[in-house]
Length: 253
Ligand code: MN
Image (cartoon, rainbow, N blue to C red; front, top):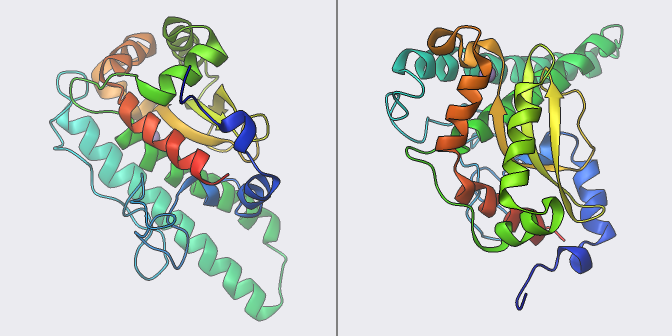
């Protein structure tokens, strides 16, 4: 199609290496330390306010009212999930970084294995929750433009991609996430099942749209009926956000 994607041609080694060097979760939020809120190259960040002006990670405000997704998700669920669970990952991430700084200061790396695990767990938890709130919008938003072309190319059709996304998300073992991601080495879209927050990722892949299937995301409203929750998520999915994420990922090339 005219004016189609350049991702097959435009992905540079530099961009891929940059993604890896920023780490599994650092690359996923556009506002790196020291660039809070600024985005890349003057573009507005797709995930604002996930890093504070002091360079520490911060809890971005919910991008809509706590009751805005009712009846799909209750005010109670969103309040607990955002204010308690997500805040917990932000706190855990900053505390882990403080402990690592103290370890370096003391030259004592006895706890480095546990701290490295905490860094991946809380860091990935923060990234995915920051993306999760933006992956939903009241009433949903359509899948169109460059993302639509990429989905048709890599999955055959929108219906096939959404069916795989829903099946993968429903099928996550224990706690985790369904993730639509852009894999920059091949310039392809992929769907991942993330266990906990950090397992089963592909290094360098940029998450575009995510669905939380930890029980805290749905148990108050759906009890054990995870499939009903995921079906509801598909109705409020913000594909325009995913399209902006793809544009941002491609701009790194
Ligand atoms: Mn969660």
